[in-house]
Amino acid sequence: MLRRNRVWLLLAGTVALLALLTVACGGGEKKQDTQTPAASGTATATPRATGTPTVTKTATPRATAATATATPRPTTTAAATPTPTPVVADPGVTDTEIILGSHFAQSGTWGAAFAPVLKGLQAYFNYVNAEKGGVCGRKIVLKAEDDQYDPAMAVEVTRKLVEQDKIFAMIAGLGTAAHSAVWDYLNEKGIPDLWVMSGAHMWNDPQAHPWTVGFLPDYFVEGAIFGKYISENLPGKNVGILYQDDDFGRDELAGLQNGLDPTKNELVSPQSYEPTAVDIRSQVENVRQSGAEVVVCACIPGHTAEAIKAATNMGWKPQFLVSYINAEPVMFVYARPENLEGTLTLQANKLSTWVDDPAVAEHIEIMKKYGTMAPGNYTAVGQVAAELTVEVLSRTCNNLTRRGLMDAVESLRDYQSELNLPGVTWTLSPDDHIGIEAMRFLRAKVTEGGGGVWEYEGDLISFR
Image 1: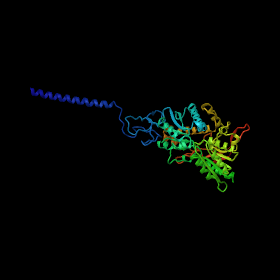
Image 2: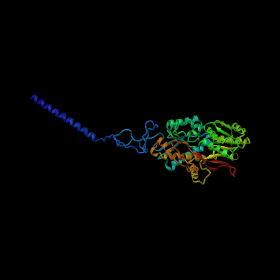
Image 3: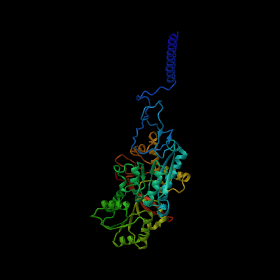
Image 4: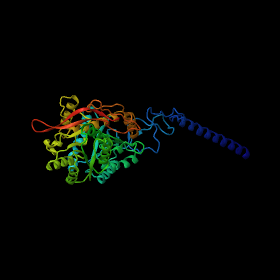
């Protein structure tokens, strides 16, 4: 009897064990049924965002903040659900802002000379933000740091803009010497370095500096235009040059030597001075004593005014040809109009005095409503740079990355601002990062009221 009971107990335990296993297995199946089906691992499990290239880990570092409105990037591994991961934007791009930076002389002599360019840039961005809602659904924020036209200061403020302010791109960095100190750094960081406010020939270097794009006409080309003009219109006259001893002045000197016909004109006295010089009267005296009858001045406005004033005080009236960076009405404040009369320069934009021109009238209105300075030729230069910035950003909305921005820059073909002279257009490519490539001569004239104006003469000179 005891043995029979043991058998029954053994059978009952076995049945109970089987029941428990059945429940356990059945419960596991029900739990799996309530879950979201797992990704199959095929290419269709996670949709790939269209038109957005995959960025490798060696690309420009990206911010950790995701933006809901930016174009989604594809995921690199199969996800548990078919929802793409959010885009991780480049630094300087948020849901509401695109942050740009600029190093710019804002104080001292150079700040006073070039402030209108920055004011024009800022006013146009203010206008776009207020009346067009910004670009790509985001407001443009421009952080402009004062570098005092000092290369060492330019390095300091550029590092701040990149490493602390996290700018998306550098816009309109001013000055040959100042920008020379920072462009290697910007290119190493993979930061778009657009519309450099300098015409140094060095900026057109897309192989070694693919992130830098020039804006102003090439100083070498300007010098060559001056040389050709002198030999065609002033043959037999000795030529002198005053030039800033940096890439700006040296490019202008080389261009002048290239453009002059040595059988018609002799270059008798090249005189250089340091960018920080406060007195260049001795260089002016050296050019005068050389017998020069024509003087090219590769100088910024303050030094140009000083050179013309010194020549006047010496009783010397050569034909001056001055760099286009002096083509601004404020020159008639720095130097007396009667002393500037007859001076030649070059320019590529409509003049701020053309108040009946629709584009100039709009610029005047923008400066009045959104700016902090009266309009002039320099504020128009700033607006053209701002217009270019808005244009290339608007082409980047579906790929709002630094690489996407450069692709848009290099896609510009025959683009023209309404403030440019007819025939002045922008064409850029991966192999060509040079800015404006056409200009006309301007001559300084005294008005009936005793003031001074710049007036165009001659045809557009193209050097493509």
